[in-house]
Length: 137
Image (cartoon, rainbow, N blue to C red; front, side):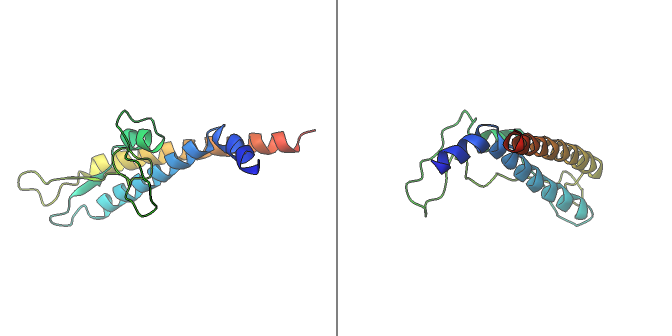
């Protein structure tokens, strides 16, 4: 009973979706920060994830099939929600030292920070509403 109540309280109001969103935004922040830090490193390839695609997969909204995991030692395949996000690398073009476009990376960093902050505030409001529902008489 406790498990179903917990599942209803947290899954029903979307808290797990916010958690997945914040986890992906955190990963993207680390990737973009790494790109900025290596802007002058020769041969460095910028890294990125397709945020919308990975979020859809993590929340089981993908149009692709997910592999079935029948044992804890199996690796999740396809669009499985537990699969590690796919990180793509951009090759350097022409005579460039690396593939980092610092202006683009700073814009990605600002956009990602804004998305993360908004999502964290919305999650905070969900918990505030839950706290209010529990403590009100």
